[in-house]
Image (cartoon, rainbow, N blue to C red; front, side):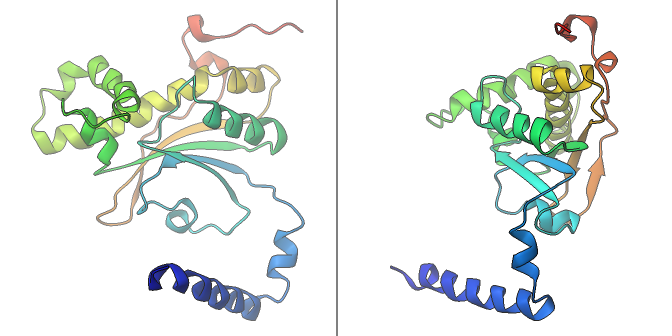
Length: 212
């Protein structure tokens, strides 16, 4: 094993010691369970750790991450996390957080073959197609940044269309969906002002009717 790998265990021990110095019951309290008010759907990019950038502690944020923070209706991993967060943990907020400079979004702007990931990126290309006229009216840098934002906005709407969220709203569960973008260059989060809180925030065609 290389030195970096072995150092991880030492870093873990130092972290445990630090936490216990600050609070002797730190791990004891964590082991009692979780009650996070937030589900975070973010990008797998290693530079965008959810808890760190919003200053929250372990136990405050339930997290799902994938390439380019996508909400894909056939993604069983995402849907399982969503259902658990909404129906069991009863989160109040679901945040889709993208980030400027996202490699997945950038790849979706090109025609380069990348392998299996092409199938995932195709979902992002659909967002480009929907907003092609606007995006191609911008210069390259602005186009990339706006594409990141539009991708987040579309994922928030796709999140609202899931049966999990639709059912929660039908049952009058207080849950709000938000779209954010994180700027790695300065650490600041931008609220895209796309907050959905009820079925009526969607077009009629997407509003599911559940048997009472």
